[in-house]
Image (cartoon, rainbow, N blue to C red):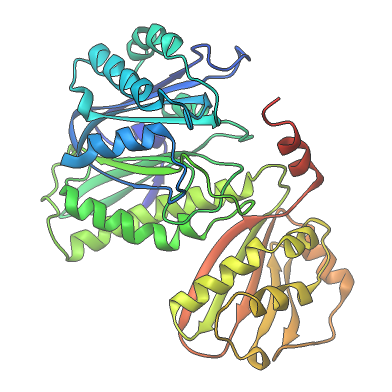
Length: 403
């Protein structure tokens, strides 16, 4: 597997673009993205479990009932959520995109992100579609910019991999900075691949992947209303079609995993107001499920996040988060270390504090990426979760997000 350039356009047969259409007041910010497969693609998706769901999710779920899609249309600046006409507007966006591209409206994935409860006028979207479509090309970077809200940087990645002796490509873009605490999927993530794989196997791969990728990310503990992850696979790599378990399926899963984990780390590290990526690696759990619960509890702990912001090696907060996680753990076996590019320092052994240099610990915790390493000594279960520090800036951003 090799990292390559191109994002969602790295795979053969995919084009993208992103422009400013007028939803966002700032004319320097792109707010409308389009991703198109030049041939029909199998499709899979997972959605937020929040009972309050954005209208685009309902429309997309209906459109993907047959497991086929050709395009993704996504606006930022308005979530199209909790609006009486939300589904009608989402359908109108789909129809307009389909008419512009000359495809079936049911083959369009529609997504929106931004402020909740504000009516979405589709007029600027429809007016901008001809120019958006005319500019389609290898512009995954522009699409990545257009789906951003409070993100400080676009997020795109791509890899090449081999299936059945054929070189395949997979790439993805994501937006996500705040209101991130998934329970099935998270944020807005669009992944494309030229690998040939059936819709059921694509859905199987995605549903399994999010358990250890997007489900293990938290910025602030809030599950969004518009979270969705989609994958389009158009088969242009001409590999033998993956229609069941086996070596080819595992190769695809590994490539998908590379994309999703990369995006998870970038989303967590770009959390609203964040200055540090917080990673928690748990090993020695009774099973993987137990490890997931503990890792997630640690990166969700507001006190731990605040300590990481202050570069304070307050390991007691980590033990506390383990203790209230609900997982069955023998706390007398727990070891904790802090690791960064500056080295590592053990701070807890067998559930108790040990002597360590506060100066060394401070130097390690001042880095931009911090890994909390936890060993439980109870079994072979393991998991990794990603979060960020809690800063003054997070409160400022969310204190005036709507106004």
